[in-house]
Image (cartoon, rainbow, N blue to C red):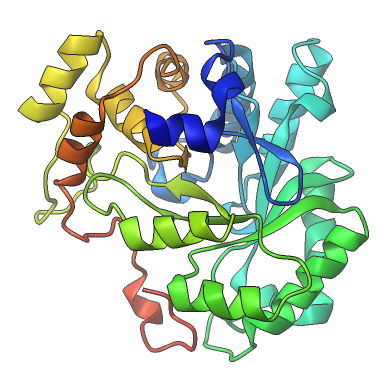
Length: 323
């Protein structure tokens, strides 16, 4: 609880339950501490682009004010349509929605960054995004084969995109500790965010702590870890029916999924749950009316096995592979 108060602030803790509170990034911009994740590649195979559009609208209706997408997800157009639907219904204005998108690996040359973001904005139907991230430190050619572009050069393009007003904040995703340090030591604008996988079986305490010590906020993808089916025989606990999570869920009148999301919130993280189910969308944001104890947070952290949901083994020999 003390960490929560320190990182989020008193006002955030007392925020309206229906919406996620915000924290201030190191550049002065504010970011909601829960985001809707999109991208069908790691969602149900049966989901369609129309499902993404509907999910964005339903999420905003449920109180979400942060949507996370990426060029490689191939759903920016539908994300933008969902946002436009919500604006047309008078639910929100553009200024009330925080939109994150990402630069893909084949656009890492400095002079490719601004054009890539302009293309994302065109698909989104927006004049700017709130946060633009380098998706991976790995660079590839257009055919997916390895390239060797220094992410420091890519970052200069990111700084130019920010200077042009195409994005309000810039950051990275999937950067490891040494990569973050090298970037911070060689940049004009410090990254506001590092987005990487964090969940009960991949707690990432050293990287989380280091980012926080540098004033870099952490967004956590795959927040449920192996609570949801990953079609892996070696999937470690906790699963959805884990008795430890079940006891906490019963205590607070919540679901195991809500307990895990709250666990990440207690650690000062910004989880990015993904769903196209209207009921589940509402459930995932209904986590701001209770707090876990420090002992409960520690108990969940003991599930850690340093096991990733996302590893992309095919890139292991590529320059700047971060895992």
